[in-house]
Image (cartoon, rainbow, N blue to C red; front, side, top):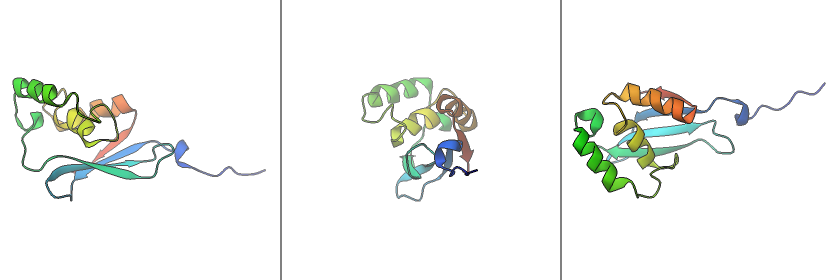
Length: 114
């Protein structure tokens, strides 16, 4: 009997969230085990900017969404702004809760190394 070769399609998708090493960026997500893709990463969030998880108001959140809703990649998991929208400006003022929401939305495990 032959054994089938293991591939990434059978493994659970995973995202690693960590501090960015890119100048001027706050966070980096590394995407692992996504079907038909090599491991890759996206940097997002301004290093010195304040967001909803940093005590910005609902009014400021609404203004951020109004400014960025037409940006390229706003709804694309392969863009930094997607992670800003869901993690930094998500439904909750708590990053851990926004991580849990995004895990459910994307059916992925997110490891927070921040």
